[in-house]
Length: 366
Ligand SMILES: NC(=O)c1ccc[n+]([C@@H]2O[C@H](COP(=O)([O-])OP(=O)(O)OC[C@H]3O[C@@H](n4cnc5c(N)ncnc54)[C@H](O)[C@@H]3O)[C@@H](O)[C@H]2O)c1
Image 1 (tube, protein in one colour):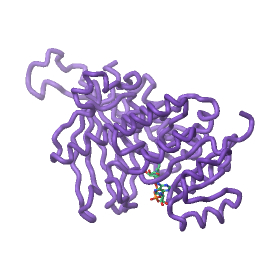
Image 2 (spheres, protein in one colour):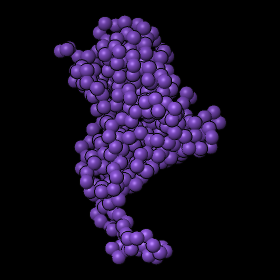
Image 3 (cartoon, protein in one colour):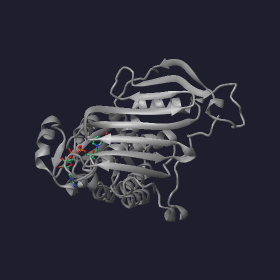
Image 4 (cartoon, protein in one colour):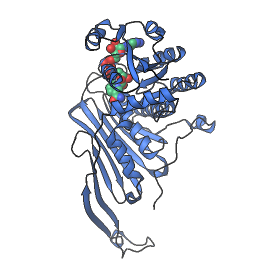
């Protein structure tokens, strides 16, 4: 294909306008049509992007022969139906996160896209964030030591969604980041939530995730916190890596610190606590150089490249479905006040339904 890939953007609320802008900027693509069921949203799009057609009718948008791909930026609860309609029309799709609100719907999208030979990508934008990529690179280096645990905080005052709770909206990012960093899916979760703003759905959540090899992770999300925090921390035997996405100068810092048994400590485990003296190892704090780039732009470029070449996206349907399975388990746990829940019910795992993607990076002790 030599001409630019024609793209439809479906849903142009808070997020969709960014896609229209970026598709117009990246090489190999052009925005052809923007569709939103709310005609009021299309007025400003028509003014900002005069060459782009606008419509409230999805069938009309997809019938345009110049459209080869669609970006779905509607509320999460509508993703499954809109995505199936786009695939049925023969379009490659980039679906915003979370891919769907039910794992069965995600599995159906994966099957439909595969049968039609179409690209299905999920907008897990943080996996295109240069700071997240730097942390993953650092995790893969030999100096880290065994990963003990990870945690993240993603809090702000709103924006509050109507169709999904704060876990589905915010923790979908953190689950995708942890799965990506550890190249694994959690085996179980335990979560509690609170409805502090309007009582309709959880606007605050705390989730513990149990990854293979005893690696634990924790996620705290909130729509009700006055501070905007975007933090991911990895604690390993030799290093502690702190990612603060709110700090444009030093978004990643590596603390060369650790705690290890004193050389004189007995090896046989006998005796009381005084028989196990520990040594604190205090080293440098390093800020690795990170080439700045816009994560959403990187994501759009990847989608265009995959749609043009047929390549499997880094954030494919299976990665999106894995995140949804974790979020479903989190909902089940919240409903039982934190009772631990398997991410994939054992019954289905035994039938092969719980396939884990990728090799495990949460390494055994070196
Ligand atoms: N990856 C990220 O970092 C990131 C950031 C923000 C939002 N998002 C995701 O993007 C999606 C949209 O978020 P938003 O904040 O723009 O929401 P929004 O509510 O501001 O906008 C959604 C738009 O979709 C339109 N819409 C609803 N149903 C439709 C349909 N069937 N067909 C066409 N248009 C329809 C609505 O009228 C609205 O204009 C969500 O899935 C959200 O999770 C992702």
